[in-house]
Structure formats: C-alpha cells, structure tokens
Length: 107
Image (cartoon, rainbow, N blue to C red; front, side, top):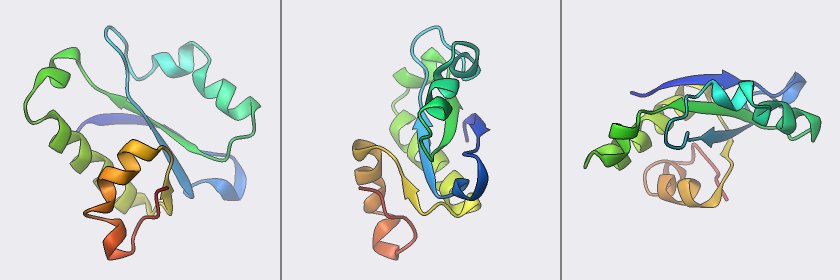
C-alpha cells in the first residue's frame, strides 16, 4: 500500500468526498501542502478530504502500478467509509469493484 497524507475537510463534511492527488515527477505528497494546493482547496470551501499519495517516480513505471494504486485507494475508501470519490477517471475504474457492491458512489 502506498503511504499517504490526509487533510480532512472541515466540520461535518469530513469523510464524505475524497480527492486523491498523485504527485508528478520529483514531487512528494507534502509538496501539495507546502506549495498551497491544499490551502487553495480550503479557500474555495470545497468539501473534500485531500488524500495526497506518496509515490516514487519508479512506481509509475511498474507494471503493477495501476492495480497497486487501485487497491490502495479502495483500502483507504473502505477504511474511512467514504461516500464518494472526486474525479471521473478513477471513480469510474473503482465502479467495477466497489460501486456495484453499493459502497462508493463516484461520478
């Protein structure tokens, strides 16, 4: 499982909608806080929990990366009981395993 940093939405919105953020080349998960990305989410009053993944550049090149990432995100969503996952592509890919079972409702 990939490590992650979570920044929960304020108040009663925490745990409702997860936004999974993947770092680019040379980035660390903490860079999203350091460079104001999470602060920008909060300033816009977006009711999402920011889940910043700690992924190394070599992980992206691994043949097992997609399945490993999918498994990690599913475990996070399940453990925290998220109702929804923000973002169309990844939410769609999770539908095969999770939404059909009625656990998550990604758009």
